[in-house]
Image (cartoon, rainbow over all chains, first blue to last red):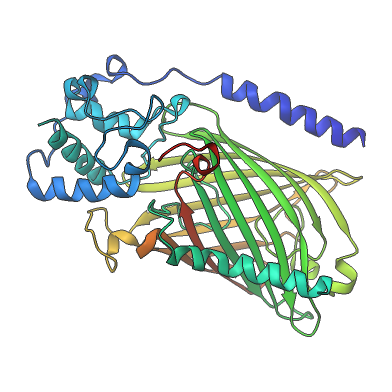
Length: 127
Length: 295
């Protein structure tokens, strides 16, 4: 029985410590220069926008809304000044990184080409 | 209704629930995990989403009867850095019986909040299972085919309360995923720590995107290698079992996923083959159904 208690205590202590040891969240100032200046190879391509819209529906709409209008504070709109001032490179970097502490998952599991498609679609929303 | 009939109903539900949900309109999110059956990658469930998956394992140990084990998996994204998961295990062995074999509760926590070249994830699990469990969701210590040949009537008498820790190291590099798992498992009774490993590599057949069903971009393929590394009483590779298993998945319409794997035993202690089938369906923002929030 002591072993059970010891195991439970170890797990309960270790988990929050590991989570608390996490590194800072993402913002445009933190984007590395090489990512910040990256150019979307599919910028302005209407097929890329359509493909990005399909990917957005699959992966993003459930939180950010069907038209990126957002749902409350935790699931922000993507038609904001913050997104508008970001470079394409910033957005691709942010999709890869996510913001785990604030609920945005990392999309590094998507191929980079597909992240650029989503960036193309997000750009089209700002116009 | 007898308890046996009830258990069979539950087992049927576990197998078919993902299929039924896959036909409903509940799910709009893509179940896009890696195709692995044993190896864990850095990917966690999206926060608020629930993934229901049935994973089956079919094998025939020497001197034993053919078995089919099924694990019903309920995986919930508690936060973007914490995924919690409940497994309900069962198995049927030809000429013997069909029985539930226990439950597992696991938690995976991202240790670093940013994406790095190697991303560590801490895994902790509690298992309340019987010796008849044949799901082989991990192989540790000196696990081998002789354990799987024991008759259900005898093996189900052996109740195990186990804790399991894993360090998951995973990288998404140039559309490839490379994941390594180091496993330490402890029976909470008087038993040694047992060790194991799992390594997986996978990639989608194509990285370009097309909004279609029969596209190579919807088919990730890979291979995983897993096995036991002995225990603290006998820290040797002797009588350990190891497998290499090609894996393939298909992201189906209605945002579901079908996956297959054939594992080939590499040592005398291993099963010759183990066949696996998985079917998953994802329910987006499941948690919010209970909080009364709009999507």
